[in-house]
Amino acid sequence: MARQSRLFVPGCPHLVGLPALAGLDPCPAEGDRRQMWQLLFETAASAHVRVHAAALLPGEIRLLATPQDLPGLSVWVQALGRRYVSAYNRAHGRSGTLWAGRFRAAAVAPGDWALAALRYVDGASSEPGRTGAGQRCGEPRQWPLSDPPEYWSLGNTPFERERTYAALLAEPLAGAHVDRLTRALRGGWPCGEAGFLRQVEAEHARPSQPRPRGRPALPRQQRP
Image 1 (cartoon, rainbow, N blue to C red):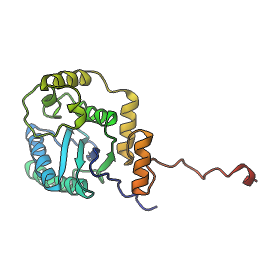
Image 2: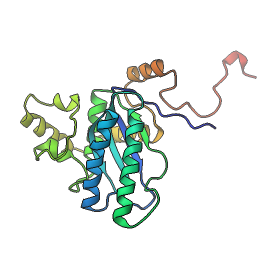
Image 3: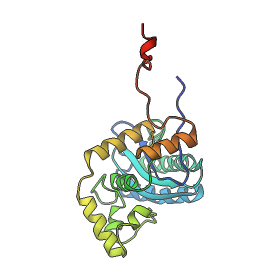
């Protein structure tokens, strides 16, 4: 069966995942994490992608970003992957890739689902340097993360937004939201309410959710 192409929606936030090889932490040391953070923004600028959040996890790099045009995400992630692997291999005296196959991407509906996706990335780790969540909770702004509209809507002042977002991160994201976002990312399916999914289907002429397994049921009069 032919591999389905990724579905990108320009101007819409996307969850992105770069799965690492089994048992490998792609950013094990502080120097590795700093290198990854720097390359995230260098490569995103040339690809016209706004980076909202990143989580440098032991098993994967998890991102939330908005591309301005159709090829933006692919151009960005491919450049990031190549440049980081080259720097990582030089630093650690190794060769070969760090990634377990293709990167994954899932468009996320603006609004409540985009805010959930932001928490899904920012709240993925509490280890210093692994995410940029602290920047949205009152810590100094070290990296040029682009705050999405959903973050700006949390308050009228920086203090209000920081306080509200810190309270949100202190509460675990609902299990149903985590499951939905994880399935969307793994399968490359858009994530949102029914209206958003119908819009994606209409604009891209392809299903927005996986089809049920098995053959479709025959109408009653056609059944043997």
